[in-house]
Length: 179
Image 1: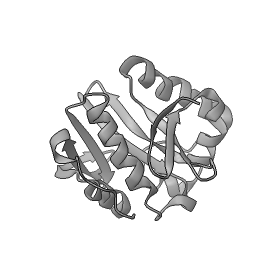
Image 2: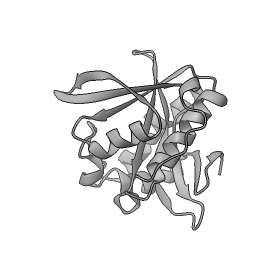
Image 3: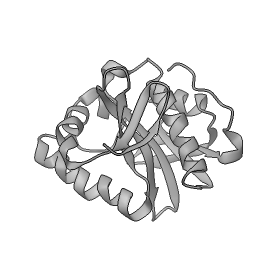
Image 4: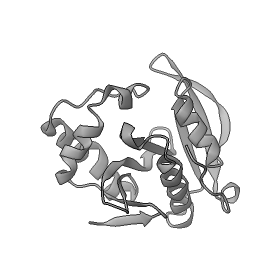
């Protein structure tokens, strides 16, 4: 297991093809995908394709990506959190997605804040963007709680999306707040 970072309660590690069942579990739940413009995964082959075509290249090409999140206490898979480079837009995007059983426990805030600090301190990224569907109030609240600043709106797939940004100077000393 290639651990990228450790928080007080979580381990974030690189995903592998063996994680297809975990990704399938996460991305086959309608409530998880409610505000996301991605198709639901239907089988492990599709999950492996997402890992191969989307997740693994980010590690190799850009030294960042979406990392599997596990609870330190018992090793359970909670979801993913990480940074994704969007070359067409020239931005690094913070993203997170957790299984519903882990919602409301502060894990997303904890993973996201530590991921931001890792991006600034270890990867030397100047600016990180977070985007959330305007109706996804929980995700918007997480981006605000971790110290990202509201920067405006955009329309993605005919849906209003709120944009947040952070830079290194604006975050250090922040502590995550319960979701």
